Length: 326
Length: 204
Image (cartoon, rainbow over all chains, first blue to last red; front, side, top):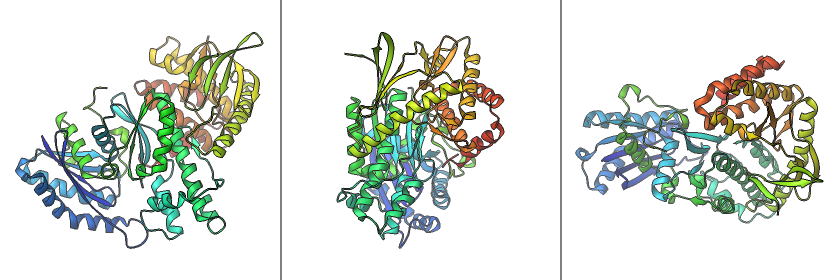
């Protein structure tokens, strides 16, 4: 069964094609803002421009024609409205033109499924950390439950906002990581864990108030140390509460080496395992949408055009996970 | 060697004898993943804080273990051993008295809030049923507040846990909320906040 997947919730336009559990192709084109962060309309225009070329290239690389496709999957949400609408339009046109099923995929669930496929994790707790999203997700009772999440901004967004203040280019995470390596002094920042949830806006404000007073490397270091400690703590709580022993990382921030080190330390002490997908599958990508689309299609879950309206606030736990037995 | 009752995410619980009595020693061991300074600060602060809150809750009339001793450097609290089962298991297995137990839980949370205490981690693993009384443990993330907003967050966490652990028994969560509302003077405001908090989340 061959499914083409379209990803476009934020700055990445991605196209992936899977044949069952085999990823045939995964390519993308990222919108880079000239200055500042993502402008939703600009990003949507970018996606509209690059999708036709991307799809053509993806089919060529996979060595197949459109007539070989069994379904069109697209990122239905959550994400930026203009971007989602662009992707959905492309997906509807393809599905209608080719008379094949359309499958609306939840972006967060897709991160988890591609991680399971590529790393071999079977029933992990997913620590999903990206620009817009920060969630701890795990399977329970037929759905992917949100065990904990940010109460305000995504962690990547926090790094971006901090980075912008000190003139770093978008996305700022990798730059903050580089600076943090040279940091030594731990500055006091609010440690904001509320049960299973975290909040980042207070830390951001406190970190910004240090600019000009402390070494920038020390601020970046403290920002990472405190924010990551919070994430690892709530992940560990989720693992303990749900009695699981696998942790899967996903999202752009998952590539941060310090975060990986901290998670590895935590899970090793719990006699569990950490799984990190290859970088191109950690960030937003088309293959994860295609693969989740394949899972949904094979269990009979498709989306009619009437129900394909985009969901900017599509919650992870709304998805009925019919393709998993336990 | 003390018998380990539970290895939690944050602390390990040991069953020990304290001058002949059954007791629990809760130790917050160092976490290697975090900065040593941050680790020391968090462990000592949470230990002191938790002991204070457990005592305050007890004074308000909420069932909590009696504290025998604390040791900040070790991050340890020695307290009364509550013989019973965690509410998480009771909910999973079902119990004839389930509705009564939930009323009990709702009322106790209301009493804490009335007294200006926020538990901060209202999971069903942090409630133990002994006879007909529900004991609240693990006040490590608790704090003082008189704001309806904070009470709302406290209840929201309970709802989140219920959704992720007992999603097939939401009527019991509703029972807790009902009992809470009948006992808490700020209930209307808290309920409004609770609804607000749910909407304020990143994706609803």
